Amino acid sequence: MLCQMIYFGIAWKQGGLSYGIGILLPLGLFAFLFFYLTFALLLQPLIVANRVEKDERLSSPVDFVVDEEQILFKNKFTETKLDWGSFQKVIESKSHFLLIYTVNKNMFQIIPKRAFASSEDEQSFRELLNTKIPRLQKFQFDLKNPVVLLAIVFTIGFCLFQCAVATFSFFLPALLSD
Image (cartoon, rainbow, N blue to C red):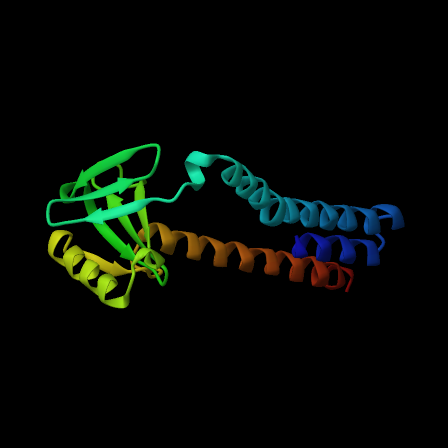
């Protein structure tokens, strides 16, 4: 978006665009970006939060009962028993444990750390996780993942390309006129 505004500003300054297009187009693009980000980052999360608040099934408290054989998730609507083989990996963040399912790796069960009565209970659960699901790991940005590396390389390359185009569009007419 910034590069587009630079392109239009340079073209307008060099006389390639009329005043109306040179000013209104970047402002229109900026307004679109502003309203889109406002909707995506502010309004949409508020709408979803409001729906969750109104749906009693989604906002009812859940009790977790953990033992050597299974984890029991229970609220006033349902009761789910899952054995430890249902999970293939655990990711620990600052405030949650995410238990990744074995069958569908895109699904996970969230256990908030605030659910534990004490830090000793939390530590006991962590030790149980280490014995039942031995691949306990802290959440981190994995630079060894080829998809992450490809995204980073592509983003840097695209930004460099945009900068080069902006630079050459500014200096190329001056070089050609000499």
